[in-house]
Length: 147
Image 1 (cartoon, one colour):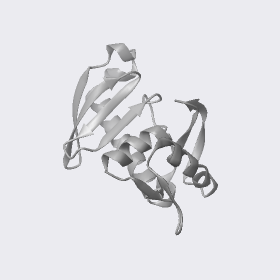
Image 2: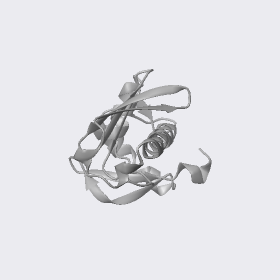
Image 3: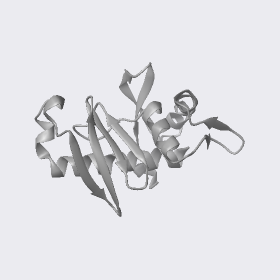
């Protein structure tokens, strides 16, 4: 679970940082003024982004999905269970290990239940905003652990 959280958080940051570098006006425009579609290269992969509400839904050439929504104008970028679930499912993961003997489904409810313990070990910090069906927002601190 920690690996998935850190991978998603890092990838989201790379995509959004690249978006800001490619389209610097995004930070000064209203969401409805943002480009409808963007193409971004991150590492070896091309990502196609589509404006979606107050964010972007990115899909890679290898079928990964990163939906970055709300709070995308500056780092650190928040994450929550729904977006992690979309990413996990795009990787075709149906269950996620959260300990040596525990696993949860890749559905948002399963992931949401597994995130609070990651606050206790310092991988996540609670964000002060609650979003989407009451799911708690978090900021990943993976770089603190070199993950």
